[in-house]
Length: 391
Image (cartoon, rainbow, N blue to C red; front, side, top):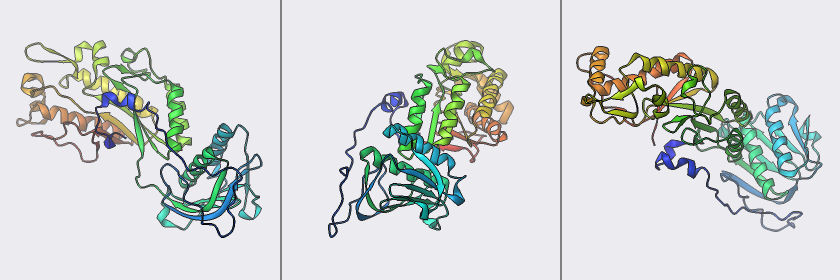
C-alpha cells in the first residue's frame, strides 16, 4: 500500500519481485509432547498470532482430514471452505472432503469452521483458534474464518503436524495491501492472480492496480482504444482477476493517473498536450484548459467505474509539476473564467480533482488520490471526502 513506502515509485516493479526468506518454526511430523513437558511455544506465522496459549501434542493433517462447516453457517462459509480446499489440494496434492456438520460430528484430523463468536474484540477479521486432535476456527464474520484458514495453511506449509494450543488473532490495520505498477511494466494475468493468492496468504486485503503511466496504458478500452498499449490486460482478464480477488477477500482498486503521467495518452492525442506561452511542449502533462481533456478522461473514468465493482476508484492526480503556472496563460485564464477573478493556474489542477471526484461519487464510489500538490490554491480547496494517500 503506497502510503507505507518512501521509495521512488520507479523502483516498485523491482521491489515487488524480491523474495524474502523467512525461517519458520517447524514441528517434526509425528511429534508428541509427553505429559509434564513445557507447553508448545507459539508457532510462527505471518503476521504473528496476537495471542497464543500452548498445549501439548500435535494435530496431524492427513488424507482423511475433512473441512467441516457448521450447519447454521454452511452457506455463509461456503466460499471460504471451497478456497481453503483448493489451497490445501494445491499444497498437498490431494482433494479434501468438505461436509456440513457440528462439533459433535467431528473426527480426529478434521478442521471445523464456524461463525457466531460473541468475542467483540475479534472484529470482522479476527478469529479464535483451538487446536487439539481437531482444529476449530470460530469467528464473528466469514472474513475472520477465512483468515483463520490462512493461519492453518501457513502452518501446514511448514509441516503436517500443528502444535496443539489456543489462539486469538485479529488485524491491527484495516487496510493491508500492495500497489502493483502495471502501467510502467506489463504483468501477465497469471502473475497477477498468483500474487492475489500470495496477498491473501499473508492476510492482506487490498490490491491497488496502477494501470496507466507514461510508459503504458495497460487496460483494454472501448471508449478510447487508441490510447491502449500493445501489451495490456483485456477486460475479460481483469474481470477474472477481480473475481479471484473477491474469493480471497481482497478489494481491487484501479488507478487511471491524470492529469500528469499521461505521455502514452498524449502521444496519440497531441492536441491535448500542455504547451507553454513560448511553445515548449510538455511530454506528460495534459492541458486542463481544453474541453477535449475532460471529455476524454470522463469517458475513461465512466468506462472503468463500471468495470470495477469495489468501493474505491483512484484518480492519481499526482506530480502535475508544470513549473510556474504563469508560463501557461491558458490555465490562468481558465481558472479565472471558472473559479473567479482571484483564481490562479493552480486552482485549475485542484478543480480537476474535484471534477473527477464528482464523477466517481456519482457512480457510488469513493475517490482516492495521491497527496502530491494538494493545497496552495487561491479559490479552490480539494473536497475533504477524497481519500489522500501519502507516498
